[in-house]
Every structure is written in C-alpha cells, then in structure tokens.
Picture (cartoon, helix red, strand yellow):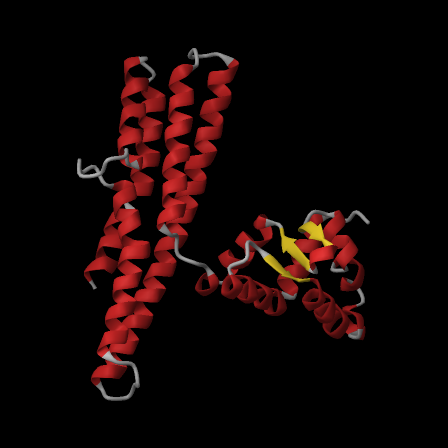
Length: 256
C-alpha cells in the first residue's frame, strides 16, 4: 500500500503526542528503535480506527502502510517487536529536544573513526577521479551529520545542565529530597559520559593516543592546500570551525 511519504509524515506530526510516547518507550528501553507491535496496534485501534474525525489517517497510519512505505523496518512478527526507521526517530527528537539523548563516548568514537576512514580514502584516491569525487561527497555528508548531531547534543546537554541547576536551587532552599551526593553523581555522570567525550573529540591537545576530529580535519585541509585546491581547503576549514565552535558552548556547560 504505497502512499506519498510527505502525507504520512504530516499524519505522524499531527499525531506527534502519541508518537513521542513511542519515542519515550524506546529511550527508556534503549532497544535500538523497537516498540512492541501490540503497543502500536493498541494506539491505532483506540486513537485512529475508533475516531470518526480521523478517517483520513486510517490508511496512512495503518501498520501495513508504515511497513510498505519504509517507516517501520525490521518487521519481525515472531519477536513481537517492530522498529522505526531512524529518519522518523530523528524527526521526532528534532521536534522535541527534551526527548533527545546526549551523545555518548561510543558514539563520538564512531564519528571520529568514520572521519579518519573517509579522510584516508580521500587521500588514497587520485584527485579528480570518480572514486575521489565520491569519497569527498560522502565525507561532506558525514560532516553534515556530525554538525547536526553535535548541535543537537549541545541543546540536550544545556537542558540537562538546567535541570541539575534547578535541582540544586531546590536543595539549597530545602525544597527537595535530593541529596548533595545525588547532585554530585548527576554532575559527574553528565561530565564523564557526555561532556568530556565531546571535549576529547574536538581537542587539539597531544594528550590523546588516538587522532581527534580536529587533528584529522587539519591534516586533510593541509592535504588540499598541498594539492593547490585552496577552495576545498577553505571549505573544509569553515566546516571544521562550524563543528568545533560548539566547544565553547560545551565548555560553558562544563564550567557550570
């Protein structure tokens, strides 16, 4: 049952109150984007099929429609689970930043490793060749992904820091059961699991055994300068700055 994807996205946004609850379930369970199949079927039956005002949504948001149009993936009926397409999860977290999850050390390491891999691929290909052009195009897409994730990460960390600050104010005023040890644990966990990994990701200090994102970008910029491709070197320099400029925002969060 094929539909225009734009219509389905509009339907999901119209029903975002319920779809954000699916996202909450995914975040709590930390299960790779899956929800119980019965959870979606129950939602559809109660809030779509039985509602006479949502006749136009019945076909668009049916289970068959979301599977056939790629909104649900990994349709494993035997497990009783069904997984959302990552694009939809990204859309939902973009709509509601509070439901986004801050990036972890593992995720930053994955971005760093992919940056290194692409940079090596670019430098190993003959300039102007099809392989070189394709590698560079893929690398630019990776930089967009990194920029987007880092920006969203800052928003989430700022929200988390604000929550901790409010908890501390309540503690100081004697209006909270939260202890000073609880607050210290929250601050420590936020810093070591989510703030420090970004600082390490962008650092130019020589204290890390592995190359940082900044190291790789500077080496690649130098490569294009040596090739006399000044335009590309400048372009990559701007992209690097756009990403590493969030260092100041993260450092401010850390200093709080």
